Length: 250
Image (cartoon, rainbow, N blue to C red; front, side, top):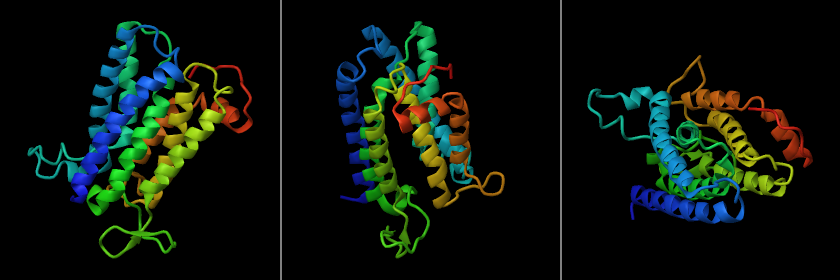
């Protein structure tokens, strides 16, 4: 099986297993996230549409030279995507869908475990795809550097991300009592992941420099952290100390 085919298989597994995990999580770990079944449909549509658009827009921002090569030929425009854009686009899509459907409660906690599981599975596919996936890191002399096919040991940033996601979920689960405010577990997930990507992008090839040496994905991560800036001190305190603190609107 070719690397591209392997990537496709793992991407499909990520969607399928992630969805099944959501169905389980909704009833077991976040039973208060949805009060009506029709809310699931509204939030699902908002998440899917927002994630699809956000993933493409993030790719266009991160690597505009590749995305708009041979424009108006659309082939390159529809090639790439980014999980950072998918998360932020999905977030905006869900918030819009909730306003339309008059959903008042936070629904994010039901997505923390499914996203973690799906993203870990997807990153296995990215790792197996090698150079063609463009998710590898810069060359490194560290002993765990991986040769993705060009004879150069590189940071296996896909594996770094899997390790981070698993560790982050373990911490969120351990501190779930401190993150008792509805939506706090999802806020913790988003804040942690955006901060991780902001840092790890610095050891990955830079497709297009903004402000001299910042990638488009780093700009998106910074924008996402700014969106959550009022919640960051409270979430960090809960994760580090295990103590609940007064809720402050995001």
